[in-house]
Amino acid sequence: MSPSPDIRDTTLEQEEIGVFIKAGSIIPRKYMRRLSALRTLQDNFLLDIYLSVEDARAQGFLYMDDGETFNHTN
Image 1 (cartoon, rainbow, N blue to C red):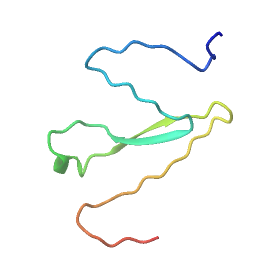
Image 2 (image 1 turned 90 degrees about the horizontal axis):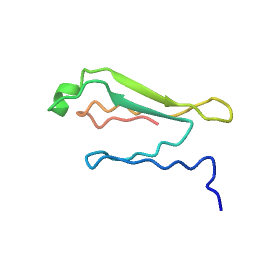
Image 3 (image 1 turned 30 degrees about the horizontal axis):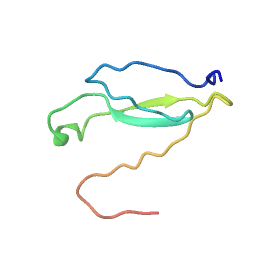
Image 4 (image 1 turned 180 degrees about the vertical axis):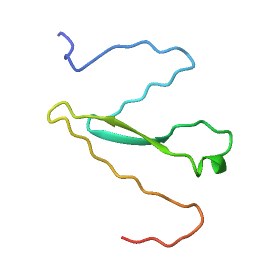
């Protein structure tokens, strides 16, 4: 049985961690690496966008938390 064209083998170094990201996802992350989470509060987000192969779209949600208040709306 031959492998599917969607299956790929890869080799990781011992200090690397493999991550699966579903096509069509948007992943927010901080651009700068900091030693303290408090220092990242004013840093911008970088959006990694992984388009769907079928329709070249992606969607996601970003919930912002100020880390202080408990007021939230629906």
